[in-house]
Structure formats: structure tokens, C-alpha cells
Image (cartoon, rainbow, N blue to C red; front, side, top):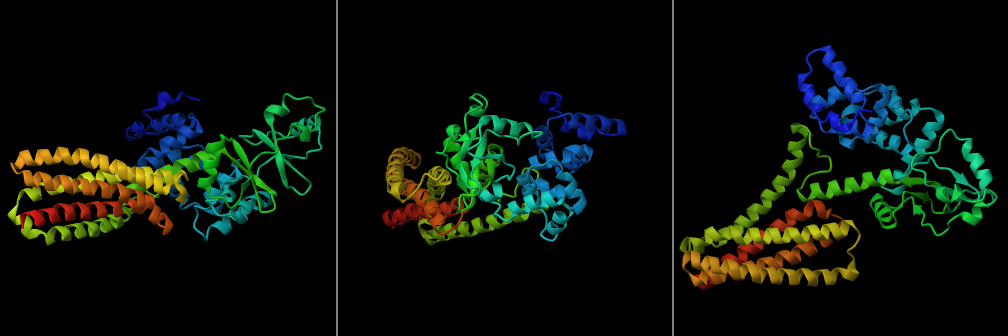
Length: 449
């Protein structure tokens, strides 16, 4: 394989393709990269260049590369393929990866693709498709190696040698009884170093937490992070072994969750990727911009109530954005911390009161600090001590409000089954803007009336 660093300008060469010789050189460079690097270059290309790279890819690599791509890019390439072409991509792919790709197809196409598959492959894929995509069942791979507890290590080793190869990312063998009930694991590290006459029962580890197939993929990722697992068994209600989840699939879940949180804070959908077309990006962004416009009108309506006061004291119009902006930033800091805590499963009713107390204290401290600073600046700026006192008080009120809103809003939205990562920032902006304008202009009206 060619060194990755020698291909950093791969995408730049696309614009220089002018004859078949250039295409051949580009295809040679592309197909000599590692599979993950090919996928990275394809995802890093704009749509037209992306299609050129895909057409230059050798057919033998297409399935593996497709499995490494994001769902949005997968859908681009799957559109227009017939069932035979899709099935051809599945050659040598893991069952869980095949199931993930099939779920990107239109509903009317899925039966055709399954019918075109071999009997054994179809049964394995269908067994995974019966589970929700975002659960342990949908994440698992049915390709496992199981052994019985009464076998000796010598017998297990001979059994393994009969396989052409063992599944990738295999760090343990799963121990089951005659009814396929999960009993424990046999680590490969023990298997390779122990006396061949030792039985599996003597070496197996039974204090292993099997994952129920109904567990959400985010909770699965938390367990892997907490226990440093490489793989883990998945069981049904009767503890019958269904399959296993491996760390490579968990990393994908972690990245997807991180993307979701990051995009959600900007009001963007998970389906938004770097090179999404204008036709698809504009409508998705327009929705949240429209919602934000409504909240902005609400804040403006609050300002309009105090129109008379602003006419009397022009300095208020100059200082208003400062109060709202400080509250927005303070609230966003708290919101980000709380949304992250919810995503990691760290926030519950037991520690919510402590969290609120902590954020209230932080809001008070920062409120006093920056209120004092801004009050002094405003008093000096406009040569008016009263306006300094008013903006200091308003800023302190808004910073405390922002801290409490940033703490409570994600919890409330979560309880209402609304995604806090997606809706939290819009709701927070409304609260901080309205409270900032209301406190600042309200106090000004009270003192200047």
C-alpha cells in the first residue's frame, strides 16, 4: 500500500484529469490506498469529484469502502443501483455492516435485495434486521465462535484450526450450554498459554455483563467505554446468545453521537454533512432559522414595549446588545456542559439539585464580576452613574437566569422527549434575550420614568 502522506493531494488532481492516462494514474493511486483512506478521500470530495472517485474504484473494494462511508454518502451511491449490484457489494462483508447498508435502501427495494442473496446470508441478515437499528440487536454481528464448558483446551484449539480464519476483532470465545445460553467468556490470552488438558470451565470468566438486545446503542457505547471492552456478547430475555458487538462498531456510534450533539447545538440535522448539496441543505436549515426568527420577534416585541424609555435615553439602545449577548454566552456554556452530561448518562434526579446549586453559584460569581466591570464602563462612557447601576443589575440578573435556564432546559426537554441537543440552544436564546431586554429596559423605565 502506498503511504498515506504521498496522497494528500489526491483530490487536487481531479481537476487536472484531462485524458485517459490521467484517469489511469488517479485510479492507480486511489486503489493502492488502505480502505479507510479511500473512504476518507471520497467523503472529503465535493459531489461531482466524489462520483469520479467512486467510478475509478476497483469493484473488489467497493463493498468494503461503502461500509466505511457515512450513511448520507452511502445513500448517494446506492441510489440507482439494482438489487444484483447491491448484493455484489456484500461479498465478504460482515453481517452487521450488510444490515446497516440495507437499511439505507428504499423500503420497496429491500425485499428484492434480500431475495437476491444466498439462503444462508439472507437468514443471517434477516435475523439482524428484526432488531431496531439503534439497539444492541441492530448493532451486533451474528458471526461468533462458541464453545462448551466441558471441553478441554486441546479440543478447542483443534476446533479452531478447522476454521479457515476466525472473525475479526476476536478477543474472546463465548461459552454456552447445550441450549445456547450464555455462561461466560474464554479469553484468547488464556487459551494460548494454558495447559492443553485444562477444561474450558476452569479457565472461563463468568463475571461478564452480557448486553440485552434491547439496550440502546448509546448505552452500549457507555458500557464499552467504562469497561474498556473489545467485544461483548448480546443475549435475549432468556440469556440465549444472539451475537456479539465489537469495538469498531461502537466507535462508529460514539462518532455519530458526537456529530449529533455538535450539529444539534447549531440546529442542524444529523443528515447534514460537509458536502451536502444546496438543494438538501437549504430547506433543513430554513426550518430552524424560521423558528429562531419567531423567537427573535418575541424579543423585539419586549423591546417595543419600552420604546418610550429608549427614546428618552438613547444610551439604552447602545447597551442592550451587551446584556443579551453576555446572557447568551453564559447560558450556552452551561447548556453545553449539561447536554454532554445527559449524553454520558451522568445526570439524574439524585444529582440535579447539586448541579443547579453549582450553576447558580457560578452565575452569581460571574454576574457580580462582569456586572461591576460593565457598570463602571457604562458610567464612565456616558458620564451617568445611574445607567451604570442599571446595566450592572440587569447583567447580573441575566447571567444568573442564563445559568439556571442552561441547567434546567435540557432536563425539561429530555423529560418531554424532545432532543435537548437540537432544541436547547433555540429555547435558551429566547430566554436570555427576553430576560436580558426585560430586566435592562424594565429597570431603566423604573428609574428614568
